[in-house]
Amino acid sequence: MLDLKLIRDNPDHVEAQLARRHGGFSIQELRAVDQKQREAQAEMEQLNRRKNEISELFKTGKASKEEMETLRAETKENKARMDIVQPLVKELEQQRDLLALSVPNLPDASVPDGEDEEGNKQISTWGTIPDIKNPKAHYELGTELAIFDFERGVKISESRFTVLMHWGARMERALMNFMLDSHAKRGYQEVFPPILVNRDCLIGTGQLPKFAGDYYKVEEEELYLVPTAEVPVTNLYRDEVLPEEMLPILHCAYTPNFRREAGSAGKDTRGYIRQHQFNKVELVKFCTPETSEEEHEKLTRDAELILEALELPYRRMLLCSGDMGFCAQKCYDLEVWFPAQNKYREISSCSVFGDFQARRANLKYRTADGGRRFLHTINGSGLAIGRALAAILENNQEPDGSVRIPKVLSPYLNGATKIEPSAAKVAVG
View (cartoon, rainbow, N blue to C red):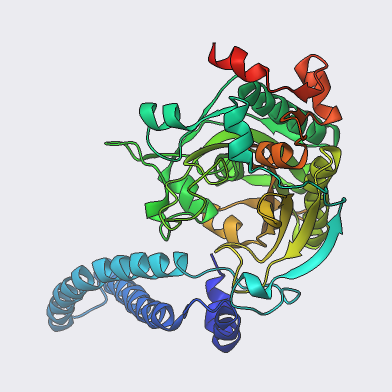
């Protein structure tokens, strides 16, 4: 959430920065409602002051009999007006806050202008693109190796749910453990949060109210399945004031994630790229405003190191103003190479939010002099496990149908170095 003071004092600047997002965002209605709320609040305060003045006159008995009658009549009128203004103040405040929640974060000055992904800027690349003749797609390899069972996933759930069998399940678990172990060595404290969260959590991290249709809600309860571990982990410290000496706080968390993908009809309908349920290791940081830029760069690098350890070619992209997420101030996408598609695909988004989420979730820290300031929050995937598995299958495929297992995963798989085609027969019995 943006600072209302910033909106009030610098409306032209805010409008200009929102225009960079190319999403039709404006603060005009918010400003109008805010002005009405402030006027109603001022009137309510004036009515209360006058009520107290009259009460004091009654107590002291200094008013004459005629004045007392006049004051009683004024008190009656005053109360009638307060009965109108008081609920109006609350109604306008709720309307203002709802409008404020619908305004996205302002792009950082370093973010390039652009309307969509065409405006994104390549920052760096890593690795060598493998020379594979007629590469098979991950879903073809996964089916042949009995790693993915798409049909049974649909049978027990619906489309875009997949059963991982044998080596698929083992690889998914190995990737999860490798990622968590790697991030722990770099100073992240592991968290295993609930995967059902309340509405306040989703408001705090910016998923609600704007994107309500994208998430799964438990019927008859105000609980949602997490779309990312960012939601419960960021809300660990909601409504708390942390001592500055605790900062920065670094957390990593594995969770299954659930998204309805309401706005992605027709996209990635085949394969294991875009699922309604998927596994991910998330990185979350809480820090001071002075260190957030540096911590953002470090977090992005921590995600890159996982890709390098898995020997997967990737590139870092700086997203343009029109392609960033709602809450992001600045965002890097890490995109891994998919040979069958002959293109890079996003596997991690690493974003810094400034105090945008902190204002929504009331995340603060206490400075050395006793003051209170909003924290800055940062997060990114470290990594999306299913996409990492799909990328490993495509980049490590061999002419005989086998798939090489990255060296760093072997210790998690009893020393295995390959997934052989013969394993498929074992998997299906």
